Each structure stands twice: as structure tokens, then as C-alpha cells.
Image 1: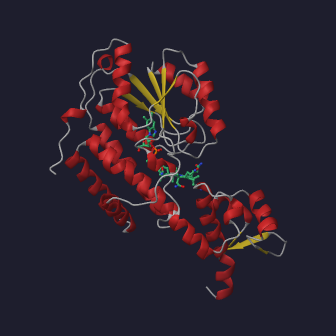
Image 2: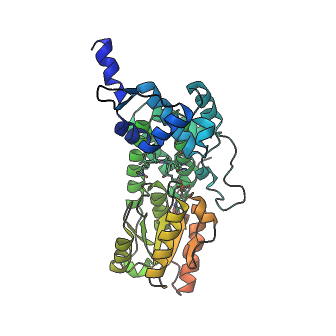
Image 3: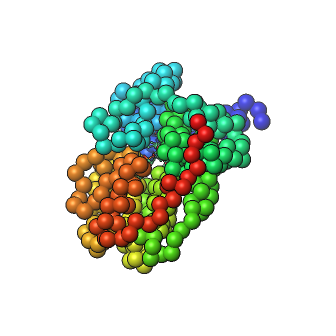
Length: 340
Ligand code: B12
């Protein structure tokens, strides 16, 4: 490939840039006029062509926007200035999982990962998915499922998101992490013994609403509920609301669990919850969690915000008391203890 063909290959049309960065075409055109960046070249028919370095700068801008910066603050900055900003950007809201409802939880301290998180980030950088999987599975065996999830997986997933936002992890590395973690969590969940259906109440259906692709939190919730002896039906991401209602009915679910990352608009979260609550029988509980800021607001009547994974046991006990169910054999106590 000569210099000229290489140069052409490394230019992208506006649709490709939109797809790659998540920044809409209209926004790209407005920024060009308003801030003088990006500065695309034009092809023979006058269509915009963006060189690779500008696409990379746009990706970093998008990460900072997702982290709460405003376009006017960051679009005019140079790549070096953006890099510096990305390094000092505070942790994402999900990092406050321990107490997501606390005052000021939106402005957490700057990143400092535990040794465990740094160890796994380093493994991820080696691109060895099998080693990563084995290492995670050894930690489950060593620590027990409950501690593994709350002490390793939850902070590690937040750490992966922050490393990605700072530009320390590539998109393909983040995807590898998600795939490996899903496999590990599914293996863990399937190894948890289940009682018969009548003894495993509440029966819980887990899913996310349309536009919400993040399911790792939901898998962690499923594992914790299975440890509490609940029967779980995992339906994965992005279920149309009408289908959620049908599924709740078809499975005769007692509880619907929904997870919300920060990517939805607040109005989307509130609308979905209002609609589901109003169309679903009152006898079915709705439990919500995740790092979306809307969950810290006043939610429609009849929605239970169970912010932290550690509070799930209490929600289950409370449900069993209200429904006069005998406590199911919780598997949580039978997990291996740490050797430390
Ligand atoms: C993995 C991941 C992905 C994976 C998801 C794979 C999968 N199958 O889930 C993929 C690669 C698909 C992805 C895509 C995107 N992602 Co993403 N992703 C993440 C990441 C790293 C982890 C998400 C996650 O699962 N978190 C799970 C846990 C750790 O967090 P949590 O949701 O708060 O849940 C915790 C508790 O709240 C609790 N919990 C959760 N739910 C519930 C429910 C109940 C009932 C209870 C009790 C508890 C509970 O359990 C967890 C335990 O700690 C986060 C980083 C982060 N900090 O979360 C970014 C993150 C959520 N993603 C982000 C973005 C921007 C995107 C994209 C839009 C990127 C893009 N430009 O394309 C796309 C989405 C495109 C789309 N619309 O389809 C941003 C959102 C920022 C924002 N303010 O909007 C984040 C925060 C990264 C960042 N720091 O910027 N992502």
C-alpha cells in the first residue's frame, strides 16, 4: 500500500464516524461550524471525509461527554489537553455502587483501583481471554460467589469502564472483558443448586428496557438472588415493555428486576417505570437498581430501589415475610470462606 492509498483508507465518511464515535451527524456539523472542530476534508463529490486522527479525538471527546463534560468545554481542546483531562476525570457514577443513593454520590473521588482490579486490568491487556476466565474462576472457588461478586467483579467492572473512558483500554478489550465475564457468571449461576419451584419463591424475572444494553449488573443480581434461594428467569437486554408484561404473566413471576446504567435519558427511565407499574398487577413487585441518576429521584409509587447488591437479601426476606413464605435455604452461608 503506498502513502496515497493508505491516506485514503484512513479517512472516514460522516456515517462511519457517527457509528464509530456515537456522535450524531448533525452534532458533527454543528461543532464544525461552532468550534472549528472537526475539520473534515471533502471527497470529489463534496462529501465530508474525516482523517483517523480526528476520529480518535472525537472518540475521546465522546468519552468525556459521557462522563459529564460539556461540549463547549472540551470540543475546542487539543488531543494533548483532552488526554490530560481524561486522566484526571473522576470515576463514573457506577463506582459509587456501595451507596448509590447517598448525597453527592455523583461526584466520587478520583480513580484508585485496588491491587485486584489492577491485576485483572493487566491480564486484560495481555488479550488472553482464557487466562482471564481461569483466573476469575479460581477467585470464585477461593472466595465464594457472594464475596467474589461484591469484592472482585463489581469494582472490576467499574474499573474497566473507567479505564476505557480514560483511553487506557481499547473498545475490543472492553468487549473481551464483557464476554469473559458473562461466561464466568453464567457458569457460576448454573452451579448454584435450585430448590423446587414452590420452595424457591419469590420467582424473579430479570431484564432491561429498550435502549439499555448493559446486562452485567443484571447477571450479578441473578447470582445473588439464586444464592438467596430464589428461582430466576434471565431474559437479557432490551425487552419491549409489552413483552416484559407478557413474560411476567407467562412465568407467573413474583418480582420483576430491572437494571439501569447511565445511558438512558431520565425521562426514558421514568416513563418505562410508570408504564410498567401501571400495566402490571400490583401483586408483582418491581425492584430496580443500577447507577442511573434517576433512581435517586422520586420514582412512581410501587417501585422498590434496591441500590446495592448487598441489600438484595433484605429485599428477599421482606418479600417472604409479606407473603408468609418460609425462608428458603439460603446458599449464601454455605460458600467457602477466604483463606486470608
Ligand atoms: C460492559 C460495558 C459495556 C458493554 C455491555 C455488555 C453487556 N452485555 O452488558 C458494551 C460494550 C456492549 C457497552 C456498550 C456501550 N456502553 Co457501556 N459500559 C460497560 C461498563 C464497563 C460496565 C457496565 C456494567 O455492566 N456495569 C455493571 C455494574 C458494575 O455497574 P452498575 O450497572 O451500576 O450495577 C451495579 C449496581 O448498581 C448493581 N445493580 C445493577 N442493576 C441492579 C439491579 C438491582 C435490582 C440491584 C439490587 C442492583 C443492581 O449491580 C452492580 C454491582 O456493582 C460500564 C462502566 C460502568 N462503570 O458501569 C460502561 C458504561 C455504562 N457504558 C457507557 C457507554 C457510553 C456505552 C456506549 C453508549 C458506548 C458507545 N459509544 O457505543 C455503548 C452502548 C451502545 C448501545 N446503546 O447499544 C458509559 C455510560 C456513560 C453515560 N453517562 O451514559 C459507561 C458508564 C462507561 C463510561 N465510563 O463512560 N458497554
